[in-house]
Structure formats: structure tokens, C-alpha cells
Image 1: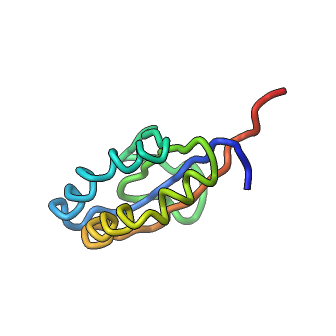
Image 2: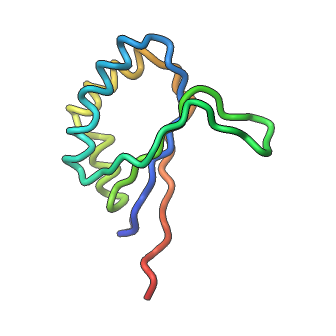
Length: 104
């Protein structure tokens, strides 16, 4: 595992707004507890190339380390909260992308 920042990239389609809102309400305090930061979201992203264009909502947030991201994802409180996301969306992917190491 590395000590570089990692980004979580999510693509999902919201099917039940009320269930997803329950997830959103609890998401940010848990994210912050693990040193995470929200970067952006986009409901109208544009695919320039590729056979599987992104649809729905794309979300990006980051953590200070791979371990922080893994701890966040495996946290019991987050997993309980994520049941609202699972109930309210069709998840296409939730991916961890490692950042570049610090410049020397």
C-alpha cells in the first residue's frame, strides 16, 4: 500500500431519489472522519471515446492514503449507510485510483 492520495471514482444511476438522499445526508460526516474530501460530481458528463459511455452521475472524492480509503469503505457505519445507496441507485462502478507520488 502506498502513502499517496487516492481518488474514488463512482458512476451510478439514481433510481429512487428519497433513498439516495438518506445516503447523501450521512455521507459527508463519515467521509470527513477518514480524512476524505469531496472533489466534484457531474450529472451530464461527456464521453469523447470508448464503447461504454458513462451515464447517470459521476462522483469523485479523495483520501490522503490508500489505507484511509480502505478504512472508510470497510467502516461498519459507512456500510450500514451504503444500504440506502444500494436501494436508491444502480451502481455501475466504485473505483479507487492512486494519485501520483509527491515530487522530490
